[in-house]
Length: 226
Image 1: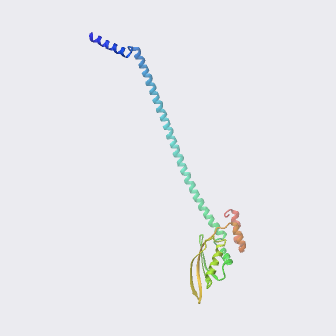
Image 2: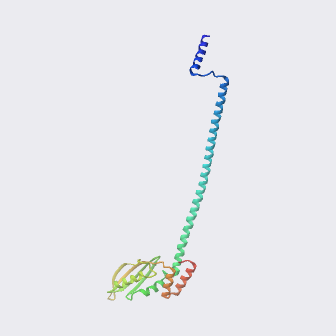
Image 3: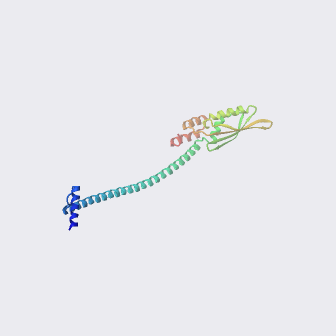
């Protein structure tokens, strides 16, 4: 009895010390309800946050899948586009080569007609060779003024509408003797030009090449040359 009384006195003293009241059953019940409410709020908040996180994650996954599909389609379209560009360039180059061949820029008749007008009388051509856009000319000039004649021919060639400006150079020259006559062989390397249709028509008309002039007019009408 004494021990119980001592415990009650000790509990009473602690309540007085901390200025607290005796907790009743109703208060405990109320605290439990409050705890359940807080727990429910925290649980619902956690569930809501997890749901939102899952929803955003799902959206990101779907967006990523959409981007992957669009990226694949883009790469496919890019490959098709590059292939079409490649084919277009090949077709353009082929048409350009055909057109250049038809207009006669690299044809023997056009070259001979042009060179017949500009070649000095002291020079004789041995060969004219066309390799794509490259032009190689071999000839021989009479001495003692062979170099003067060769330089003169070089300047006249450089001004020709068939030859690219400043592309003519003397790649080789060597002296030979034939029938007790001193001669100077030479080799020119140059490149063909790409003249406009107007320049071609003017020069073909000047040279009297009616056939080539008709070709140029036809290709101009078809839009194959400018």
